[in-house]
Length: 532
Image (cartoon, rainbow, N blue to C red; front, side, top):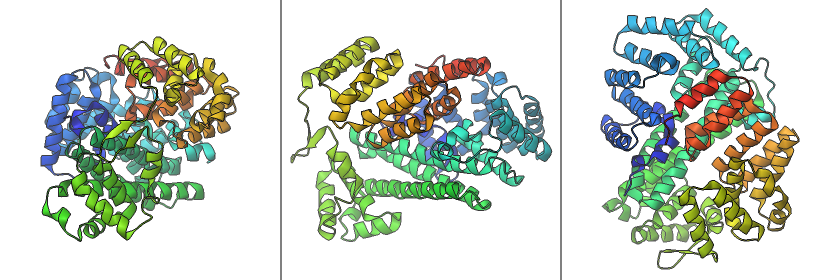
């Protein structure tokens, strides 16, 4: 069995979210996670993201000396202002203030790239050099063409595209927001707050999917560490977001509304994680047989009946039906409509699997042989052969359930236009996730940006796997001549996506080069050169 942190994809989903844990987990829990991630690094010794996660955990454990040695061992310290800034923070925690101040002062003088300027801004704020911090922020805003930004639908739908601080790791973004508040800097401030809250919500979306994948594939006890860490991240994220939001009134009413909406979603996640954690911890204990167990669970977690019922449905299918089914039956007796009120039912209606009375899943797909062949092609790794197999069968009306992957491969191979003529078929089949994807592509190729972006968003809402949609959108935007938007999407995907970095970073490199930013393109290539 693979535990939650024994899987790299789960680790990538959390990313630098460990920087949001604060003091919400015990040192013993953090040390256990650190040991597991250190073992994972032995399997992937060149994975820089695992190394940086170790540094975040060492920071939480207060082992600043070891954290410094890790960062110094990356081999690119002189070229990496992010690592240098983190080292300065560790030096400060160790009481070595003179060394810290000297390093920060050097970082202020290095302003060659937008990334350098952001770190210089953080360094100036940390040293309480107000005039330099204010000057640098204005310079950054000008560089990113965000002066006097008009808050329109694009900003509200894609706030991360208009944020400067979100190009930093999330922990450094927090420091940036604190500096903006300290000096009452208002330029782009409201967008930065909104983008921060939005990003936390998106991060939790991704973490949640990985938790439930682990729950299904490995079991409840393997998923438990995910619930524990996610609850800590959501709690601290909500606390920070609320603090930033309430510190200074938000004047733009649309941004204010969107921040409230995302804060509510984050709060719901804190209850969801708490429910999952307490349910799993209560398994095989006397507490779960207490007639008041569900009432106590609702009171302790702040969750509602639908959240509890959905969690029970998730746990039912993990070999625990003897424990879980009595609780499900009890909830159905007290609320006969609860199944209709839960999101789980819509998920189950669209699933490819039918649940049997024996508690097993049986495949409900008449194309088993084709699926087996497709699986073999995926394992073989020949994208061209896989695409031609898929596209041929899709044209014949077969394997339509795999359409999203056909279009993903088409985008990767530069052959997307070969499948756009299938739009009428998808309309007839009412496969709206693909209909909206293709219509969005057509609008973007005509440089009709706003309708194109809206249609891609609708494709996700209709059921298109979000990482696939966003990778395709990044490719579309490059092709349509909007590389700046591509950069924001790719940076976000690299932080949180289920997809391998190798599917994303070449698009980012292309976007930088389209803008003539060879230095940034080379830095991205260097960052991912050893990625497996």
